[in-house]
Image (cartoon, rainbow, N blue to C red):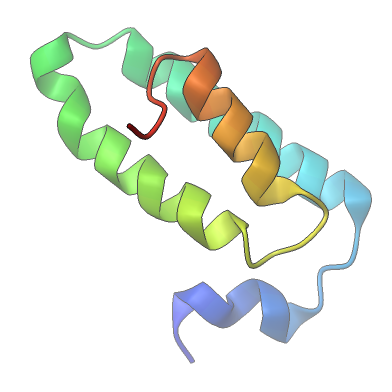
Length: 77
């Protein structure tokens, strides 16, 4: 099993869990914003992959992550 399918396999249908996931995503964005711009790219790429996968998890996780990426200045162009 790949890590991309872990949440589906575990059956995490818990709103509190997904809310916590989005909050942790925001904490990661805050940490990336605090870095020098030359250091941000690799981390933003990783967060983009998480954000993209978030659209498969339900509960609006991907949409919330999209909003946060835009709020922190990393919206897709």
